[in-house]
Amino acid sequence: MPPFELSAQAVIDLETIADFIASDSPAAAREVVAAIRESCRLASQFPEMGFRRPRLTSKPVRFHVVPQFPNYLIAYLPDSKPLQVVRVLRAFQSTRRLVVDSAE
Image 1 (cartoon, rainbow, N blue to C red):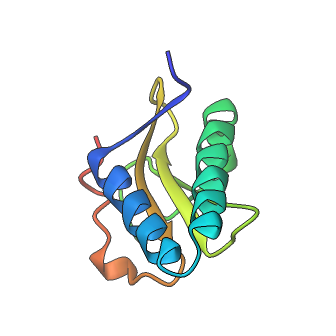
Image 2: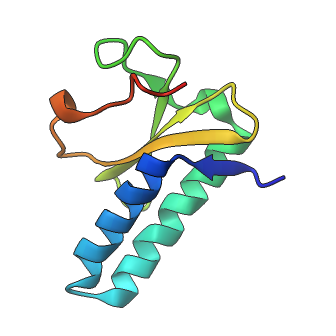
């Protein structure tokens, strides 16, 4: 079993991020995607390491900043097996538009 799964929305998020970066530098896009995937793997090993955002969602979603690229963070369900990554976010996104409450 893989250590984590990306939700359909997380796949879209990751592809959008990669496409945006790749328009300037395909190598940088690969590096960012690899770092995000590594953060997902790390969160699967230590699911309680992330922080909660109770003002953003009532669901048990945790958020973890990607260490190498702190402008990105993952949102995941810490009790899921394998770990369910529900969103991959850019830090400057408007939180009003986030839909993490649809996470199950």
